[in-house]
Length: 55
Image (cartoon, rainbow, N blue to C red; front, side, top):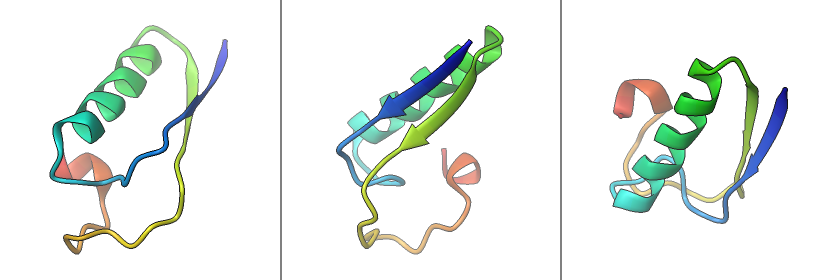
């Protein structure tokens, strides 16, 4: 199953909703889905290049 997860959020972020979005994508992937996370290109506040390493 392919899932396109669309989020109107700054990712990565220090906010809880960004963490929840990434966890949902990870959970879908753990159950065998091919997940693509689509989010707007915004300037991130912290200098984070590795999203999985951040969370």
